[in-house]
Length: 266
Ligand code: MN
Image (cartoon, rainbow, N blue to C red):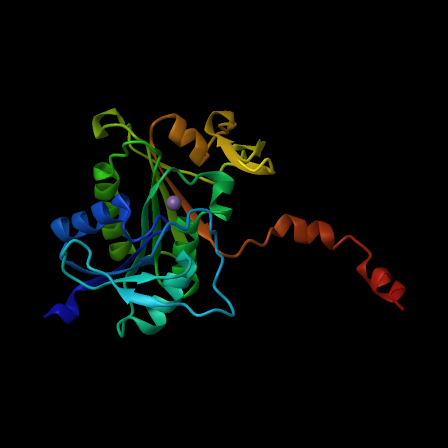
């Protein structure tokens, strides 16, 4: 009767060997009667955003994920490649959910534009599958257990209620015990980016290069945002749609004399 089981497509951007993905995989098998198909990058692709591999081969190899049941594939490509290739070639069944994570480090506000974790889930939404990206706000000694339980619980709600077409949920979990978390917060993306610091450094050969660092303390925590929820120790849930059109700007552009601009092109 396995054909009746829900199929979860599990991916990430930290790579198939990342502890966040393995913890989430284990939690799904322990807590839910779902099938899991793992299709994840063969190494870390954090910061890959929605990039895809064009004009080069994308190799896929079967991977033994600690002898856990279900198939796992390592993809020599980006997180978006994993979703595209996985759905097209590695399963005959359409998954019920694309689950991306658990990422090592939060994905808040404008982070979503460079996040491979979020982009994999957006790719799932583009291909018509309800999708969830989940990230833990920690880098060192990260404890993924709570985030994994949150992911499975929210996945269950998505499977029960569905999501509007083209929508994914971007979820961030604070790095603290459940007892110290007030609860969920429905949020919008914060506009304040982390303060990206471009540092100039010098390598061993005396050549200068640039190092992109970021300072999470430099974020403005506006009302209703994922940044504020994280600062308050809550689990943020931000629904995201891939249609990035800004309707107020369309109205403003309608007041420009584009007809004259076109005629001036001669
Ligand atoms: Mn990552």
